[in-house]
Image 1: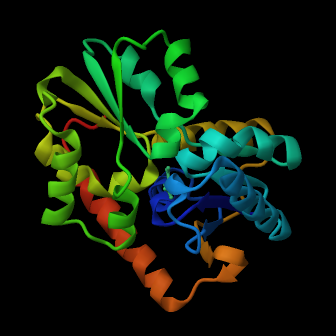
Image 2: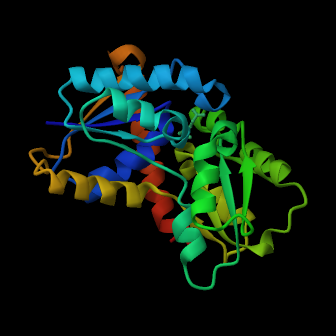
Image 3: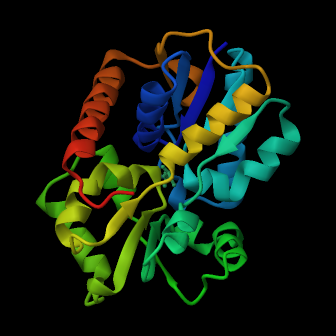
Length: 263
Ligand code: DGL
């Protein structure tokens, strides 16, 4: 039985990338809701409806578990999904905990979509960690679209700098990438931020969590790292999408080598 990985678009490939690497004995379905990306500008009700459609698709495909590889969908839909569908559902969340607990940390900057920054889930996480005074939040509304368009050059660097304005970046020991699309810009972030700033994302921890849940339930294994790609409405992805996905996976692999300071 397969593991379903779902995102609004290409951002979730960063989760898939880690899943293939660390859990190669599984098969995967990757579902990208490309008709509705970006979720960051949608209402919570819309995002819950999109996420439910993804869960129903994964169930129809016989998936044994689903990973919501979208911080935005996790922030507004994870409880709704868990109370409506009877299979293990995991969600990625901004990795604030490792950022505020590692030794020697200073201030932490969390970048995410407008929905994630606004919604209660992230604020509750930060207050549970008693880190309100150490964490700044910054919405980056256009970054998802830059990633979807595969724009990774000067224009995106300009955009990120504009959003940061005259913020003193040397105050940050950690930059938390609270949107899976942002993992595609790690090279640009590492150019803009001081080299001491660690760039953290929650994908490795989410895959570790998936491993332990499946192991606990006796559901691990049975595959070979095969991936089937689907887009909105459960449509089997065409060649253009599969090629685009491969370009993202290669880029993510490259960036693992060049990014320094990543926790
Ligand atoms: N990858 C999604 C996330 O992690 C992006 C949401 C969007 O489509 O705006 O938040």
